[in-house]
Amino acid sequence: MSRLPVMSSKRVLTNSNSSSENDSAPAQKRLRKDTDLHKPQGAATVVSGRRAPLAATRAPLSRPVRGVGAATVAVGPSRGALKPSVASTAAKGGNMKPPVASTGTKTGGGAPRRHAWDLKGKVSDMEDKVRNYQTRVKSVNQENEVLKDSVVQSQKKFAEMQKELEEQSGQIRVYKVQLHELSGVKEDLEKVSNDKNFLEKELANLEGKYKVMETLRDSQETELQTLKMKLSVQESTLTRLQGNLRNTEEEVRSLKETVAQQKDELHAGEMERRRLHNTIQELKGNIRVFCRVRPLTGGGLSKHIQLMPSDNKTMTLVKTEESHTGKTADTQKNYNFSFDRVFGPQTSQQDVFEEISLLVQSALDGYNVCCFAYGQTGSGKTYTMEGDEFDETRGVIPRAVQQIFKAAAKLEAQGWEFTFTASFVEIYNETLRDLLYTGKASVRPEHEIRKLSNNEVTITNLTYEKVINEDQVLGLIALANRNRSTAQTAQNDRSSRSHSVFQLDIEGVNAGRDVKCKSTLCLVDLAGSERMVKSQSQGERFKEMTAINGSLSNLGIVIAALANKESYIPYRNSKLTYLLQSCLGGNSKTLMFVNIAPEPDSFGETLNSLRFASKVNDCVIGTASANRK
Ligand SMILES: Nc1ncnc2c1ncn2[C@@H]1O[C@H](COP(=O)(O)OP(=O)(O)OP(=O)(O)O)[C@@H](O)[C@H]1O
Image (cartoon, rainbow, N blue to C red; front, side):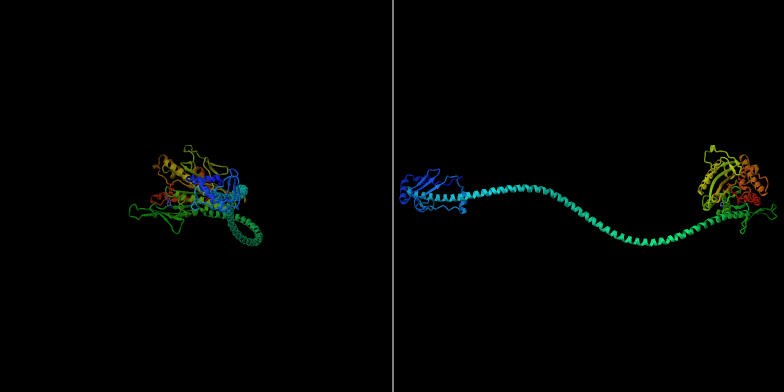
């Protein structure tokens, strides 16, 4: 910190001396000269508070600060030197007057340089300087005052500003708190904004949906209108229909009465049909014989069998005998036969069955029916009775079974309920064998034919299988064939030497009419009828032949006895006739197929078969009566 220049004469002197150090010696002279030159007109005293006061003996000559005379400049105690910058600032501010230019000796380039001896002049200069300084001090003091005011003002302002600053700091703190709060609010706002965006999207979505719903509602309203219209139309239709319904109910009531009446009529008609059907069958004969000629293995016709194309009931067996001498013509002997039907080699299985289907119907009507095939081995008995697996070549048994189940289904509509029981038995060497047996061969049971008190015939230990449809029966036939072929393997050609008897027991009940019926359909494939030359038959074969011939001839005897209405019918003479007695007796309808092998070398057997069949054909079995209760 620089001090303001202190106006002391001593310092001034010192300064003068220092400025002209080399001139110290002649100082008094120069002082005298100056004093002479510048005689002060009054005395001036500079009083300094701290330093020794400098007595100005003379007033400055050139530019006195005060009027001529003594002037006292009181310089206050220096409280601190003004900074040059402050002084300078004060000067610049205009509050300070520029320093008073010295009119005395100039130390610089401008003021005249005094001689060392010019002390007076120097004093005068110094006084000038002092005055100048005083003026400057005054002005500085003034400036100082101004500055003090200014400082006070500034301090006040500073205090105010500080206060304001504090207030503002307080305010800032408040703002900060608010800002902090606002940042939370901002987050909330962002959240709200996000929610808003989401809700806007939702809203847009819902608006879209709303529009769709509106469209839907519109279309549904339209639909509703349409439905209302339809409803009203349907209500009127309903009213009309209700009227119609009442009328219809009336009609239904009367129709029910009619139906009941017609059912009665239908039942009566059915009974009448049965009666008439039976009459026809009786007129046709309760025992009928059909002759069927098998085709030749290589095709064509054999010459010895002559069939009349115009007549399907007769046939001629022609025997040509060569002349023994060769001189006479060959003799030809004709054997004429007539049967209920003669089927040529081309007759189909269907055509054959049509002829016996009426008899099958009779079985359902409650009459015992027996159908058997007679003929030599290989003449076509099995083919006629069973046929083979193809539809067109199916034989009598599968076709009869099919017809029976179809007819039974139709009769069910008239209140009939049927139960069917099937059995399949083989008679070999006068021994019975169950063809539906499925148990172990080693424990095969033995069978006996028994006649019950109600004249029904049954076989002990035989499988009687309840069947409800055609397929089941076909399955049993297949089982019987397997059983037969097993036996056949054990004994060569056994099937030809045994009779197989398929029986279907039929029981019908019409609960509404309180009518029952019971009958048996019996389909028999007889053993080969060929007669063996006794001399060639030995052992088992002889036994077989005897059994076969015995049973077949007994069949002829029984049929003849029945035809002759003999009191004793020898059914028990063979297992076959004993088993078939209910089917052959008075209460039955019998059909015999006589199968013919067309080969010339079978002529003898053919003749025998035809003769046997003719005998049967000549029989008339007594009028059959249905087994009804
Ligand atoms: N009407 C026919 N049309 C075509 N083929 C037939 C006819 N009759 C029989 N046959 C055929 O002749 C052969 C012998 O017939 P089938 O086996 O039926 O004789 P069968 O009298 O039953 O002999 P067996 O006493 O040995 O049982 C069989 O191949 C059979 O297919």
